[in-house]
Length: 109
Image 1 (tube, rainbow, N blue to C red):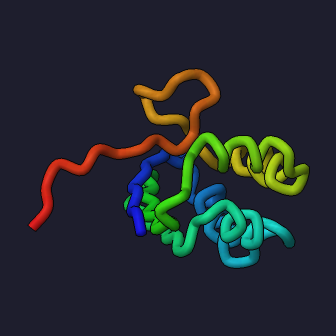
Image 2 (cartoon, rainbow, N blue to C red):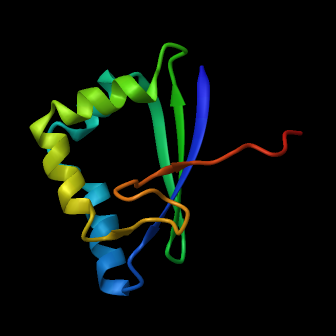
């Protein structure tokens, strides 16, 4: 099992943040399945103000490149991603169009 941590920001508007959280309580049909089919076993998203922090636990065979290809071929995932850009804001160091950014682990106890 592998663990990845990613970060992303939200738009700084309380109403949009509330909508974003609501969408994550009632995902579009097919989103949960696409996540699981890609090899992600568990996913959690935490929020502090406008900052999001995602923890993903995956099968050892999981590859971001394969997930990206599956997402690009899935019209429901593309619809979801387009909808989520209304709420999301790229981190300052993100490349154009880049959303969730992989964080570097710097400490383990």
